[in-house]
Length: 457
Image (cartoon, rainbow, N blue to C red):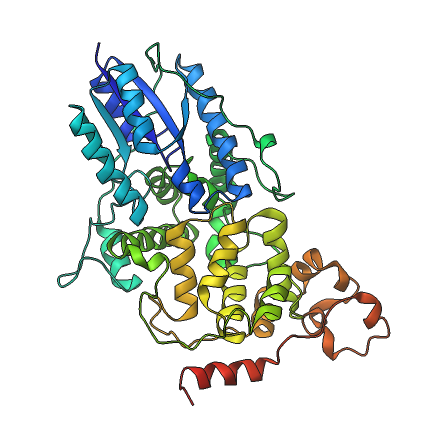
């Protein structure tokens, strides 16, 4: 009997899963394996919100496999050692895994290949599983990757995508391969109160609803803070409970300007993944070094804490930061505003903000999180690195009646209309009782500091 191992990483699904399909087509039995990797935990990437969502995903994946006659095998420890051990227990000929883009994922593939070859086994790495287009599928003439989105997007749009593959009907798992219990969300402490549920079943329900009710208005409403008119599919893309290939195909099938705008965001995701695949150190180092004289964390400690807690005195910034803490998720326009405020108005190193986001975001993806922070901070791929987003102007534009602010900053719920965006200007006899702070920095002073530090005067 021939046996294949499918190593699950960021692809926790049964629909459109090329490694699983190839294993089932080429072997008599398959071991679907997930390793709770000790190196990931040691590196600090096991934030509670993602661990809870992961537990949902693994529970759902195990249930889907059991419906098909199989089961999920869960192990903990060094990922290479556990894969080699499982391969020996199952007498597997090969291991199949989706390609990753981070420095760690690339090292993992190298270690797996070496260890398996020493045992007389093969490793197959599959592209276009966690991204719609493989990171190296399109490159400019003089470089190994695109550094600017627009030319990348032009090429990306012209590339044919593979066809999605169907979910299997039957999965046969060999006897004799031990497994730990599948983790449960209830075992994870300190989870955000409003964290959404994970798993492929939830992902596919949300996708169906989005294609039916949301995508048509996406072009006009994707920046609408109170309307919450984005897909909220990013956690499912991060954990791979949705296939980006299938998502692009189905969005394009919906047609219209909203679908085009949504697919463009999926292209941005692929763009960031191809940047990180080519420049893995961009997860911690400036992609375009600017010799920024960031304020030290000690010097800016009070400002950083106010930003984290949603107590900056700028209501739209505080609303977004409180949404993050409550839901483990934040509206994309909120991410841009809060990042610009920290990196440019407060002039704090982008890595401080990126680290806090990774502590809370359920969709905390290294490629998207770090490179979006760099884009905002002016050290990344943005062609206008000196732009500064004014939180008051942005609030008036994207939360014109103040509904988003009043939802997340209850201290200001009694202030009607757009006046809520500048409470410090009100003649408010109840101001002290509201327990809401004055702005921690004057916007003009913050802009002047930014310009002096960047030698822009």
